[in-house]
Image (cartoon, rainbow, N blue to C red; front, side):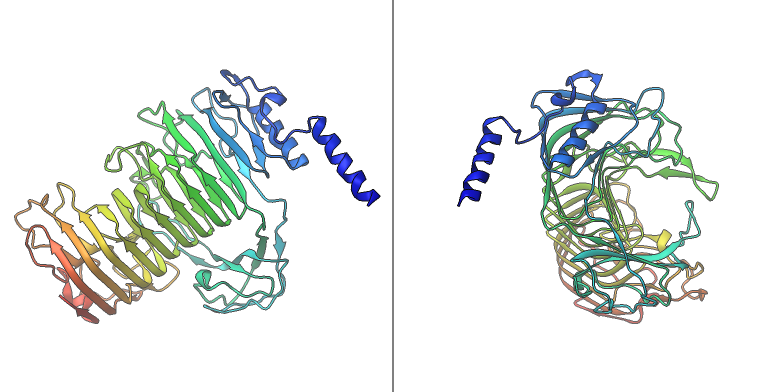
Length: 506
């Protein structure tokens, strides 16, 4: 009893002496006047907050200027940016460390190497090792290359890898099941998932764009999330000062090797599209994103949108992902959903996608429910990675609005001539369900337009055998498709390629 009274008295004394409930940037010297470089004070505030286990709160009405100070604010506690504004000025003489994010959200839990696993099999239920708790696991075979890119940005691929969630007994969660066989494992790492959620909310961030040459020198000057179990709410990002040239950005909000993330009510901005010379020595449009996810599992974006017109072709698509699983977008309005180097299991509900549409390569189930797509193709399988989807496509109650100038319309487009080794066998979906679809193709005025097709032109010479297999067989189920032009829905302008499909309802 005496011990209890002593602890209570200590707690009361600490409270009465004004022990802070949170830290502010002003406490560490920030001015918030929009002119003084407050970045050193911001870095110091978060360092102290991490040490004391206290949240950080920005002061409403203040404007924090972030100049060319080298460093990153490490975030391990909750942050409330409120209605404060942050100016990230990349326009000056040059950013000394363009790869250093302004904020990096990280865990205090250290990654753990997993030893002794020599191989893994696709859909294997357990890795055969105990873990320190529920973890995001990365497995790699550097001796086998995958995603060997084709086209103007061609490359030699990356080591075979993927990410999944496993519990303390090594059981793999089914939504993140293994995509490939690993005949050899050159590395495995477990990143423990924090039990307590970390919340970041508010803030109006404005990037004054860089004026660097238009080359693939990516800038990472935003918020990087490298911790699992994080919720990001009501963050706004704007862009000013873009010229007719500039280096690309790799996402103002960049999620990297993280699981169980929710991004809610956030507002992003698409970047201008610039031209550069790709690895094949020809001119290419240069990708620059405002939202990116790499090596993530179980991530949801809800009620998010962008400041720029989703159909303005001056701007690049706003969203990209690589090596992700179990992604969900709900009530989002984006110019683009793009899965570059593989995604497994995607759900898009009540969303609207603009001029760059829905672009994927991967496996599992892709579901579109109550979505609007402004493009000549409902779903595009990325040709630079083999136009491959091994699994199912489910489309329910969607609307395809075809833009002016389109000459063809398809429900699935892509290209694979079978002449390039992507590092894996390529597939067309084994099942494609299309139910209650409206195709608004009134804007198509080409006199040779035959009507919408289920499949676009995947091969130019159907009779020519490729060196690498492209598996095209399965079932197509069609129910209640309405075409505004009145033209019939066809199979393809090269129907022979799809002879191994059973098509119901056409």
